[in-house]
Length: 117
Image 1 (cartoon, rainbow, N blue to C red):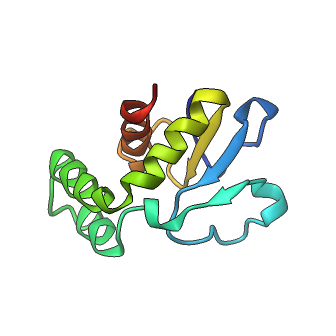
Image 2: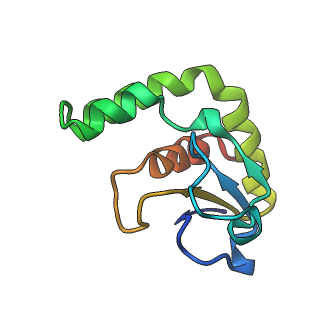
């Protein structure tokens, strides 16, 4: 099972393996509070992609396409997460609130689910 959460949401036992998929460490949050098992920076969008999105110069569909292109280099890692999610719960963490559909962790979740058995 794959879940997604904001880094600001409290850790719960049901989260299983908590994996930070952000390029930068969250300011003001200790490792203990975040309670992660892994930090996989390169599964976050590039700095350029985030800047372009935040500048309002693209649609979400364009963002999704560019993020997917960036992730082609990491298919092996995505497959590893898919195998992991077949046997236990993993929770992908990023900054955006869980209610915001415009976060790469939701896209990454779908990529992982496509690779899952």
